[in-house]
Image 1 (spheres, helix red, strand yellow):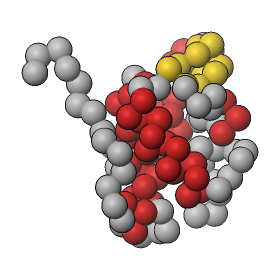
Image 2 (cartoon, rainbow, N blue to C red):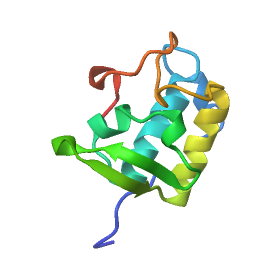
Image 3 (cartoon, rainbow, N blue to C red):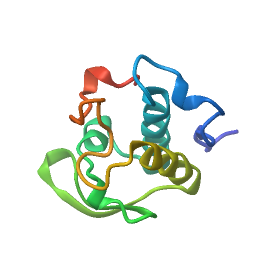
Image 4 (tube, rainbow, N blue to C red):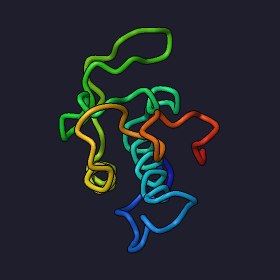
Length: 112
């Protein structure tokens, strides 16, 4: 398995039922899948907004050093899990990874 990275698969049945909050397990699974499927850092991931997602990746991502990366592709398996989270979350704008109150998830709230 040299040269291969671990991949997160589609959300497990009942993934939205785990965690302290509604859909927290699905949110965390989507976040980990996007991290693995895009190469983003946790801080970069937590700053992503729904409007940046194109269905294949993210546009205009603020990366380390304050630079903007025009496009960050996301692997298909991660897009599937992310699509489940976006559908469950129901928001069309704002941060992608949020708490129940709609605020952006902090680094200390992430399972990674």
